[in-house]
Amino acid sequence: MRFTKFAFLAALLLLAATARNTTADQTIYADALTNAWEDWSWATVSLTATSPVYSGTHAIRVTPGAWEALRLNHAAMDTTGYSNLMFRIHGGATGGQLLLVQALRGTTPQTAVNLPPLTNTWQLLTLNLSALAVSNVSDFTGFWIQDRSGAAQPAFFVDAIALQGAPPTPPATNAPALIVIDAARDRHPIDPRIYGVAFASTGTLAALTAPLNRSGGNSETRYNWQTNAHNHAMDWYFESLADDSPIPGAAADAFVAATRAANADAMLTIPMIGWAPTLGPNRQRRASYSIAKYGAQTANDWEWFADAGNGIRTSNGQPITTNNPNDANMPVGVDFQSNWVQHLVGAWGTSATGGVRYYCLDNEHSIWHETHRDVHPAGATMEEIRDRMTTYATMAKSIDPAALTVGPE
Image (cartoon, rainbow, N blue to C red; front, top):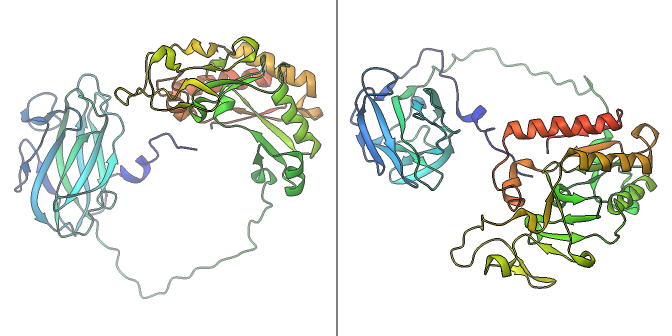
Protein backbone atom coordinates (compact mmCIF):
# COMPACT_ATOMS: atom_id res chain seq x y z
CA MET A 1 0.00 0.00 0.00
CA ARG A 2 1.25 3.47 -0.84
CA PHE A 3 0.39 6.52 1.08
CA THR A 4 -1.07 9.58 -0.86
CA LYS A 5 0.63 12.38 -0.30
CA PHE A 6 0.92 15.49 2.33
CA ALA A 7 1.52 13.59 5.60
CA PHE A 8 4.99 15.17 5.54
CA LEU A 9 3.50 18.60 6.33
CA ALA A 10 3.09 17.78 9.99
CA ALA A 11 6.80 17.07 10.31
CA LEU A 12 8.36 19.52 7.87
CA LEU A 13 6.24 22.66 7.80
CA LEU A 14 6.54 23.82 11.37
CA LEU A 15 5.17 26.87 13.15
CA ALA A 16 7.77 29.50 13.94
CA ALA A 17 9.17 29.24 17.45
CA THR A 18 7.57 31.64 19.89
CA ALA A 19 10.40 31.55 22.43
CA ARG A 20 13.18 34.16 22.26
CA ASN A 21 15.95 32.95 19.95
CA THR A 22 19.54 32.58 21.16
CA THR A 23 20.77 33.39 17.61
CA ALA A 24 19.24 36.28 15.72
CA ASP A 25 17.39 35.48 12.49
CA GLN A 26 19.53 35.94 9.38
CA THR A 27 17.71 37.71 6.55
CA ILE A 28 18.40 36.22 3.14
CA TYR A 29 15.99 38.28 1.02
CA ALA A 30 13.94 41.36 1.91
CA ASP A 31 13.52 43.56 -1.19
CA ALA A 32 17.02 42.37 -2.18
CA LEU A 33 19.52 39.67 -1.32
CA THR A 34 21.52 40.53 1.78
CA ASN A 35 24.15 39.10 4.17
CA ALA A 36 26.39 37.99 1.28
CA TRP A 37 23.74 35.75 -0.30
CA GLU A 38 23.96 35.44 -4.11
CA ASP A 39 21.65 34.36 -6.94
CA TRP A 40 23.02 31.23 -8.65
CA SER A 41 19.72 30.20 -10.25
CA TRP A 42 19.29 28.22 -13.43
CA ALA A 43 15.67 29.28 -13.90
CA THR A 44 14.55 32.65 -15.25
CA VAL A 45 14.61 34.88 -12.15
CA SER A 46 13.89 38.51 -11.35
CA LEU A 47 14.94 39.80 -7.91
CA THR A 48 12.90 43.00 -8.33
CA ALA A 49 9.35 41.86 -9.12
CA THR A 50 6.80 44.42 -7.93
CA SER A 51 3.62 42.32 -7.88
CA PRO A 52 2.67 40.33 -5.95
CA VAL A 53 4.82 41.41 -3.00
CA TYR A 54 4.49 40.12 0.56
CA SER A 55 6.40 42.91 2.33
CA GLY A 56 8.41 45.93 1.23
CA THR A 57 8.51 46.80 -2.46
CA HIS A 58 9.96 43.77 -4.22
CA ALA A 59 9.73 39.98 -4.36
CA ILE A 60 11.55 37.29 -6.36
CA ARG A 61 9.77 36.06 -9.51
CA VAL A 62 10.80 32.59 -10.71
CA THR A 63 9.72 31.15 -14.07
CA PRO A 64 10.94 27.55 -14.05
CA GLY A 65 11.37 25.23 -17.01
CA ALA A 66 11.61 21.49 -16.46
CA TRP A 67 13.71 20.81 -13.33
CA GLU A 68 14.85 24.44 -13.22
CA ALA A 69 15.34 26.18 -9.87
CA LEU A 70 15.83 29.36 -7.91
CA ARG A 71 19.21 28.79 -6.23
CA LEU A 72 20.50 31.07 -3.49
CA ASN A 73 24.16 30.58 -2.57
CA HIS A 74 26.39 31.55 0.34
CA ALA A 75 29.97 30.85 1.31
CA ALA A 76 30.15 27.79 3.58
CA MET A 77 28.57 28.72 6.88
CA ASP A 78 27.85 27.13 10.26
CA THR A 79 24.16 26.49 10.94
CA THR A 80 24.62 25.96 14.67
CA GLY A 81 22.14 28.25 16.37
CA TYR A 82 19.65 28.20 13.49
CA SER A 83 16.53 26.02 13.47
CA ASN A 84 14.53 26.66 10.30
CA LEU A 85 14.56 28.00 6.77
CA MET A 86 11.46 30.14 6.37
CA PHE A 87 10.00 32.05 3.45
CA ARG A 88 6.76 33.27 1.93
CA ILE A 89 5.72 31.78 -1.42
CA HIS A 90 2.92 32.63 -3.89
CA GLY A 91 1.73 30.64 -6.91
CA GLY A 92 0.84 33.64 -9.05
CA ALA A 93 -2.49 33.89 -10.85
CA THR A 94 -3.13 30.14 -11.09
CA GLY A 95 -1.07 28.39 -8.42
CA GLY A 96 -0.69 24.62 -8.52
CA GLN A 97 3.07 24.56 -9.11
CA LEU A 98 4.86 21.41 -7.92
CA LEU A 99 8.16 22.27 -6.27
CA LEU A 100 10.79 20.86 -3.94
CA VAL A 101 13.35 22.42 -1.63
CA GLN A 102 16.87 21.05 -1.33
CA ALA A 103 19.74 22.39 0.79
CA LEU A 104 23.44 21.93 0.02
CA ARG A 105 26.53 21.07 2.00
CA GLY A 106 29.40 22.28 -0.10
CA THR A 107 28.35 21.22 -3.59
CA THR A 108 26.37 18.16 -2.45
CA PRO A 109 22.54 18.37 -2.43
CA GLN A 110 20.91 16.97 0.70
CA THR A 111 17.43 15.55 1.40
CA ALA A 112 14.75 16.89 -0.97
CA VAL A 113 11.53 18.09 0.65
CA ASN A 114 8.43 18.19 -1.58
CA LEU A 115 6.22 21.23 -1.11
CA PRO A 116 2.43 20.99 -1.40
CA PRO A 117 0.98 22.49 -4.60
CA LEU A 118 1.18 26.28 -4.43
CA THR A 119 -1.89 28.47 -4.04
CA ASN A 120 -2.55 31.92 -5.46
CA THR A 121 -2.07 33.51 -2.05
CA TRP A 122 1.01 34.09 0.10
CA GLN A 123 1.88 31.09 2.28
CA LEU A 124 4.42 30.89 5.09
CA LEU A 125 6.60 27.80 4.81
CA THR A 126 8.95 26.96 7.66
CA LEU A 127 11.25 24.01 6.97
CA ASN A 128 13.24 22.50 9.80
CA LEU A 129 16.96 22.36 9.03
CA SER A 130 17.01 18.80 10.35
CA ALA A 131 14.49 17.81 7.68
CA LEU A 132 16.76 19.41 5.09
CA ALA A 133 19.77 17.54 6.59
CA VAL A 134 21.76 20.73 7.29
CA SER A 135 21.21 21.21 11.02
CA ASN A 136 24.39 21.97 13.02
CA VAL A 137 26.76 21.65 10.06
CA SER A 138 29.72 23.86 9.18
CA ASP A 139 29.49 23.67 5.38
CA PHE A 140 25.97 24.88 4.54
CA THR A 141 26.19 26.69 1.19
CA GLY A 142 22.59 27.47 0.35
CA PHE A 143 19.47 25.92 -1.12
CA TRP A 144 17.27 25.78 -4.17
CA ILE A 145 13.52 25.78 -4.84
CA GLN A 146 13.12 23.53 -7.88
CA ASP A 147 10.45 22.31 -10.30
CA ARG A 148 9.62 18.65 -9.53
CA SER A 149 7.07 18.09 -12.32
CA GLY A 150 9.57 17.70 -15.14
CA ALA A 151 7.76 20.35 -17.20
CA ALA A 152 7.68 24.12 -17.49
CA GLN A 153 5.45 25.76 -14.87
CA PRO A 154 3.90 29.22 -14.41
CA ALA A 155 5.88 31.85 -12.55
CA PHE A 156 5.85 31.77 -8.77
CA PHE A 157 7.02 34.34 -6.24
CA VAL A 158 9.17 34.17 -3.10
CA ASP A 159 9.63 36.84 -0.42
CA ALA A 160 10.80 37.35 3.17
CA ILE A 161 13.42 34.59 3.14
CA ALA A 162 15.40 34.02 6.34
CA LEU A 163 17.23 31.55 8.53
CA GLN A 164 15.42 31.41 11.86
CA GLY A 165 17.40 31.38 15.08
CA ALA A 166 16.91 28.40 17.39
CA PRO A 167 15.05 28.85 20.70
CA PRO A 168 17.14 28.66 23.87
CA THR A 169 17.88 25.34 25.52
CA PRO A 170 15.78 24.89 28.70
CA PRO A 171 17.86 25.27 31.86
CA ALA A 172 19.05 22.09 33.50
CA THR A 173 17.39 21.01 36.70
CA ASN A 174 19.10 19.34 39.62
CA ALA A 175 16.09 17.12 40.36
CA PRO A 176 16.19 13.76 38.56
CA ALA A 177 13.26 12.97 36.30
CA LEU A 178 10.88 10.39 37.71
CA ILE A 179 9.20 8.05 35.24
CA VAL A 180 6.64 5.59 36.51
CA ILE A 181 5.49 2.73 34.28
CA ASP A 182 2.33 0.89 35.27
CA ALA A 183 2.06 -2.13 32.98
CA ALA A 184 -1.32 -3.09 34.45
CA ARG A 185 -3.01 0.23 33.77
CA ASP A 186 -5.61 0.74 31.02
CA ARG A 187 -5.23 -2.76 29.64
CA HIS A 188 -7.74 -4.14 27.18
CA PRO A 189 -7.92 -7.09 24.80
CA ILE A 190 -6.56 -6.62 21.28
CA ASP A 191 -9.38 -6.54 18.74
CA PRO A 192 -9.20 -9.99 17.08
CA ARG A 193 -9.97 -8.47 13.67
CA ILE A 194 -6.41 -7.12 13.52
CA TYR A 195 -5.35 -10.69 12.77
CA GLY A 196 -7.31 -10.91 9.53
CA VAL A 197 -5.71 -12.27 6.37
CA ALA A 198 -6.26 -11.93 2.62
CA PHE A 199 -7.42 -14.62 0.19
CA ALA A 200 -6.92 -17.43 2.70
CA SER A 201 -8.30 -20.90 2.06
CA THR A 202 -10.65 -22.62 4.49
CA GLY A 203 -7.76 -24.70 5.79
CA THR A 204 -5.49 -21.72 6.35
CA LEU A 205 -8.22 -19.77 8.13
CA ALA A 206 -8.92 -22.74 10.37
CA ALA A 207 -5.24 -23.35 11.12
CA LEU A 208 -4.67 -19.71 12.02
CA THR A 209 -8.09 -19.29 13.66
CA ALA A 210 -8.18 -16.02 11.73
CA PRO A 211 -11.51 -14.21 12.18
CA LEU A 212 -11.43 -12.12 9.00
CA ASN A 213 -10.69 -12.90 5.34
CA ARG A 214 -10.30 -10.04 2.85
CA SER A 215 -10.81 -10.18 -0.89
CA GLY A 216 -8.87 -7.12 -2.00
CA GLY A 217 -6.07 -5.86 -4.20
CA ASN A 218 -5.74 -4.20 -7.59
CA SER A 219 -7.84 -6.71 -9.53
CA GLU A 220 -10.80 -6.25 -7.15
CA THR A 221 -11.04 -2.62 -8.23
CA ARG A 222 -12.33 -3.99 -11.52
CA TYR A 223 -14.50 -7.03 -10.84
CA ASN A 224 -17.49 -7.58 -13.12
CA TRP A 225 -19.80 -9.68 -11.01
CA GLN A 226 -22.26 -10.19 -13.88
CA THR A 227 -19.71 -11.87 -16.16
CA ASN A 228 -17.51 -13.11 -13.26
CA ALA A 229 -14.35 -11.53 -14.66
CA HIS A 230 -11.53 -9.31 -13.41
CA ASN A 231 -9.21 -6.82 -15.04
CA HIS A 232 -5.76 -7.29 -13.53
CA ALA A 233 -4.62 -3.75 -14.35
CA MET A 234 -0.88 -3.04 -14.20
CA ASP A 235 -0.30 -6.32 -12.33
CA TRP A 236 -0.84 -8.26 -15.58
CA TYR A 237 -0.76 -6.17 -18.76
CA PHE A 238 -4.11 -4.47 -18.10
CA GLU A 239 -5.95 -7.60 -19.28
CA SER A 240 -9.59 -8.44 -18.69
CA LEU A 241 -9.64 -12.13 -17.71
CA ALA A 242 -12.51 -14.54 -17.22
CA ASP A 243 -12.75 -16.33 -13.88
CA ASP A 244 -13.40 -20.08 -13.93
CA SER A 245 -17.19 -19.97 -13.99
CA PRO A 246 -19.52 -17.89 -16.18
CA ILE A 247 -22.10 -17.81 -13.37
CA PRO A 248 -22.66 -14.24 -12.11
CA GLY A 249 -20.81 -13.55 -8.87
CA ALA A 250 -19.27 -17.04 -8.76
CA ALA A 251 -15.76 -15.95 -7.68
CA ALA A 252 -17.07 -13.82 -4.83
CA ASP A 253 -19.59 -16.45 -3.77
CA ALA A 254 -16.85 -19.10 -3.65
CA PHE A 255 -14.77 -16.77 -1.49
CA VAL A 256 -17.64 -16.24 0.93
CA ALA A 257 -18.34 -19.99 1.09
CA ALA A 258 -14.71 -20.85 1.85
CA THR A 259 -14.55 -18.15 4.50
CA ARG A 260 -17.80 -19.19 6.21
CA ALA A 261 -16.64 -22.81 6.28
CA ALA A 262 -13.87 -21.73 8.66
CA ASN A 263 -16.27 -19.65 10.82
CA ALA A 264 -14.59 -16.43 9.66
CA ASP A 265 -16.10 -13.22 8.29
CA ALA A 266 -15.65 -12.24 4.64
CA MET A 267 -14.64 -8.73 3.61
CA LEU A 268 -15.48 -8.06 -0.03
CA THR A 269 -14.27 -5.06 -2.04
CA ILE A 270 -16.92 -2.89 -3.70
CA PRO A 271 -15.39 -1.40 -6.88
CA MET A 272 -15.84 2.37 -7.11
CA ILE A 273 -13.58 3.31 -10.05
CA GLY A 274 -16.51 3.36 -12.49
CA TRP A 275 -15.27 0.71 -14.93
CA ALA A 276 -15.72 -3.06 -15.16
CA PRO A 277 -13.95 -5.56 -17.44
CA THR A 278 -15.49 -6.95 -20.61
CA LEU A 279 -14.66 -10.22 -22.35
CA GLY A 280 -14.44 -11.28 -25.97
CA PRO A 281 -16.39 -14.08 -27.65
CA ASN A 282 -16.30 -17.35 -25.70
CA ARG A 283 -14.97 -15.44 -22.66
CA GLN A 284 -11.70 -14.61 -24.37
CA ARG A 285 -9.26 -12.12 -22.89
CA ARG A 286 -9.28 -8.48 -23.85
CA ALA A 287 -6.39 -6.01 -23.64
CA SER A 288 -6.46 -2.31 -22.82
CA TYR A 289 -3.20 -1.75 -24.75
CA SER A 290 -3.47 -3.87 -27.88
CA ILE A 291 -0.16 -3.94 -29.72
CA ALA A 292 -2.03 -4.31 -33.01
CA LYS A 293 -3.97 -1.12 -32.25
CA TYR A 294 -1.46 1.05 -30.36
CA GLY A 295 1.88 -0.14 -31.69
CA ALA A 296 5.01 -1.75 -30.28
CA GLN A 297 5.40 -1.66 -26.50
CA THR A 298 8.28 -2.40 -24.16
CA ALA A 299 6.71 -5.60 -22.76
CA ASN A 300 3.78 -7.90 -23.50
CA ASP A 301 2.03 -11.04 -22.25
CA TRP A 302 4.21 -13.41 -24.26
CA GLU A 303 2.81 -16.46 -22.50
CA TRP A 304 -0.97 -16.25 -22.96
CA PHE A 305 -1.96 -13.18 -24.95
CA ALA A 306 0.83 -11.71 -27.06
CA ASP A 307 -1.27 -8.75 -28.23
CA ALA A 308 -1.57 -7.42 -24.65
CA GLY A 309 1.09 -4.78 -24.11
CA ASN A 310 2.16 -2.96 -20.96
CA GLY A 311 1.08 0.45 -22.25
CA ILE A 312 4.62 1.85 -22.62
CA ARG A 313 5.62 2.80 -26.16
CA THR A 314 8.85 1.27 -27.47
CA SER A 315 9.48 4.36 -29.60
CA ASN A 316 9.92 6.79 -26.71
CA GLY A 317 9.51 4.85 -23.46
CA GLN A 318 6.46 6.94 -22.54
CA PRO A 319 3.01 5.72 -21.40
CA ILE A 320 0.27 5.49 -24.02
CA THR A 321 -2.30 8.16 -23.18
CA THR A 322 -4.61 7.85 -26.18
CA ASN A 323 -6.09 4.43 -25.47
CA ASN A 324 -9.85 3.86 -25.50
CA PRO A 325 -10.90 2.52 -22.05
CA ASN A 326 -13.77 0.70 -23.75
CA ASP A 327 -11.32 -1.66 -25.46
CA ALA A 328 -11.40 -4.02 -22.49
CA ASN A 329 -13.83 -2.35 -20.08
CA MET A 330 -17.24 -0.77 -19.82
CA PRO A 331 -18.45 2.16 -17.72
CA VAL A 332 -20.50 1.18 -14.67
CA GLY A 333 -22.02 3.08 -11.78
CA VAL A 334 -23.39 2.59 -8.31
CA ASP A 335 -26.49 0.78 -9.64
CA PHE A 336 -24.27 -1.95 -11.11
CA GLN A 337 -22.67 -2.56 -7.70
CA SER A 338 -26.03 -2.23 -5.93
CA ASN A 339 -27.28 -5.22 -7.89
CA TRP A 340 -24.22 -7.16 -6.75
CA VAL A 341 -24.80 -6.36 -3.06
CA GLN A 342 -28.42 -7.42 -3.51
CA HIS A 343 -27.18 -10.67 -5.09
CA LEU A 344 -24.91 -11.29 -2.08
CA VAL A 345 -27.70 -10.68 0.40
CA GLY A 346 -29.95 -12.97 -1.60
CA ALA A 347 -27.29 -15.70 -1.68
CA TRP A 348 -25.96 -15.44 1.87
CA GLY A 349 -28.48 -13.46 3.89
CA THR A 350 -27.89 -10.17 5.65
CA SER A 351 -24.79 -9.51 7.74
CA ALA A 352 -26.91 -9.99 10.86
CA THR A 353 -27.83 -13.52 9.77
CA GLY A 354 -24.38 -14.69 8.71
CA GLY A 355 -23.99 -12.98 5.35
CA VAL A 356 -21.23 -10.64 4.22
CA ARG A 357 -20.43 -8.40 7.16
CA TYR A 358 -17.72 -6.11 5.75
CA TYR A 359 -17.54 -4.16 2.51
CA CYS A 360 -14.22 -2.48 1.68
CA LEU A 361 -14.67 0.69 -0.40
CA ASP A 362 -12.30 -0.15 -3.24
CA ASN A 363 -8.51 -0.41 -3.06
CA GLU A 364 -5.62 2.10 -3.07
CA HIS A 365 -7.41 5.03 -4.70
CA SER A 366 -4.29 7.17 -4.41
CA ILE A 367 -2.51 5.14 -7.09
CA TRP A 368 -5.39 4.52 -9.48
CA HIS A 369 -3.58 6.76 -11.98
CA GLU A 370 -0.75 4.23 -12.03
CA THR A 371 -2.29 0.80 -11.47
CA HIS A 372 -5.45 1.59 -13.45
CA ARG A 373 -4.18 4.32 -15.77
CA ASP A 374 -5.94 2.70 -18.75
CA VAL A 375 -9.29 3.85 -17.30
CA HIS A 376 -8.32 6.48 -14.68
CA PRO A 377 -5.20 8.28 -15.96
CA ALA A 378 -5.64 11.34 -13.74
CA GLY A 379 -4.86 11.17 -10.04
CA ALA A 380 -7.93 10.85 -7.85
CA THR A 381 -8.76 13.94 -5.83
CA MET A 382 -9.78 13.93 -2.18
CA GLU A 383 -13.21 15.26 -3.15
CA GLU A 384 -13.68 12.54 -5.76
CA ILE A 385 -12.93 9.74 -3.29
CA ARG A 386 -14.96 11.40 -0.52
CA ASP A 387 -18.00 11.58 -2.78
CA ARG A 388 -17.59 8.03 -4.10
CA MET A 389 -17.18 6.62 -0.60
CA THR A 390 -20.30 8.41 0.58
CA THR A 391 -22.30 7.19 -2.43
CA TYR A 392 -21.21 3.56 -2.32
CA ALA A 393 -21.31 3.22 1.48
CA THR A 394 -24.83 4.68 1.51
CA MET A 395 -25.83 2.19 -1.17
CA ALA A 396 -24.47 -0.82 0.75
CA LYS A 397 -26.05 0.31 4.04
CA SER A 398 -29.40 0.89 2.33
CA ILE A 399 -29.46 -2.78 1.30
CA ASP A 400 -27.92 -4.25 4.48
CA PRO A 401 -28.07 -1.65 7.28
CA ALA A 402 -26.07 -3.77 9.74
CA ALA A 403 -23.15 -4.34 7.34
CA LEU A 404 -19.96 -2.38 8.00
CA THR A 405 -18.24 -0.33 5.32
CA VAL A 406 -14.47 0.01 5.52
CA GLY A 407 -12.18 2.68 4.08
CA PRO A 408 -10.36 4.54 2.81
CA GLU A 409 -7.88 2.07 1.30
